[in-house]
Image (tube, each protein chain N blue to C red):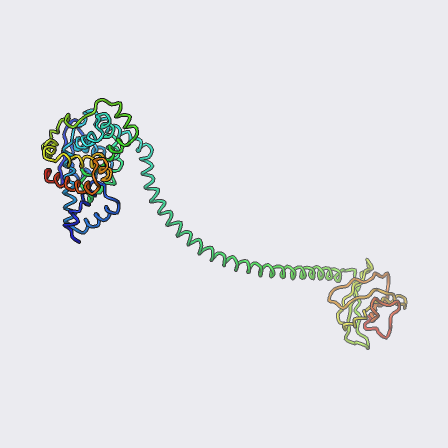
Amino acid sequence: MDIEKYISSGILESHVLGIASPDEAREVESFAAKHAEIRKEIEAIRKALDGYAEAHQKTPPAHLKNRILNEIDKLEGKENKSTGKVIEMDARRSATSRWLAAASIALLIFSGTMNVLQYNKLNEANERIAVLQSEKSMLAEQFNTLQANYTQTENALATISNPHNKTVVMKGLEKQPDALASVYWNLLTKETFLIVNNLPEPPSDKQYQLWAIVDGKPVDMGVFDVTDSLQKMKAIESAQAFAVTLEQKGGSAVPTLEQMYVAGNI
Amino acid sequence: MEILITFSNTKPLSSRAYTEDSLVASLKAKDKEAVNALYDNYSPALFGVILKIVRSEQSAEDVLQEAFIKIWKNAEQYDSSKGRLFTWLISIARNTAIDHIRSKGFRKELQTESNLVYENERTESLNTDHIGLKEIVEKLKPDNKEIIDLIYFQGYTQAEAAENLNLPLGTVKTKVRISLRQLREIIT
């Protein structure tokens, strides 16, 4: 670039006078940054205009100084009372808010990560809760069963160990010599209870039936299933013996003597 | 270009000495003592320029006040790498005054105001540091002065000046350059 030519183009004068276009002004400033001669030239033009301005100087009236200083005082006072403090707080607030912004982003990332972790943990926990709940209901069931068993056993024990009881052990006959069942007969209440100690499982269309032998005649005491529990049978006023036969399901009016499994005398 | 500014007049607090840099720093720090010093040192130049533009003492006082408020408010915008403090202050004064004469209110004011102040009525500054206006006017060719005044003081663009002077734009551009060159020769 021909610096001499640029200097003599008049653009520097326009720039200093403030009448150059924004594009021209940028151009001048960028050339000025690079070339000392241009800077020197601009400085000289400024000095001339400053000198020209200064040549017009006139001392303002004496009262004006206080008026202007008071005006600025008022402005300052206002700033101090309201905006001044606000500016101060704004600066602090902006520092604080920048800090807060950074902190909140960090917090957001942290909380996002935590959310994912917590979500996974929650799912795990929920699964475990489901497992535990089913375990719990299983245990509750078992407990209920055990409690029922216990109650049953306790009742059975109470029944069996009743001091008014007459225990009749019915032993196996030829058909099944190792068969065994027991009748507990409360002589006070006349109630009877039966425990199957050992009887073969009957065919599905058959059921065992208990009989009392009263004065040589069989009296129906009811049918029963092969279980571990004490089974309440019919009450009987008096009897000399008890026996069990295998009958059709629901029982028979007359015992089938060939199908007698156990019997015991009182 | 450090200028030592001292002032020891009326106000007892005005006993501090400022360099241009420390004055700028104090001004930016909103130190009111700095405004005091600024006023003492620059108000004649600013007032003179404003008066030249608005041509009324009354208006010039208002404009000077307005200019000082702008200076006070915008002090942090001043960049010493882009020019002297004086240049910045003068440009604020000029722009404030030009805005003033271009406002509607001012035209009415001009119509009713009788005490217009003219250049030849001015009392010249007692300051001997700078070249006097008389000297410049004596040396500067009238049409060169005219074009500088239109652009620098009245805020005309070159196109507006061309229209006002009834000259082609190219001629105005050349004249601006020549006028400033002459001004430079007179002042430096």
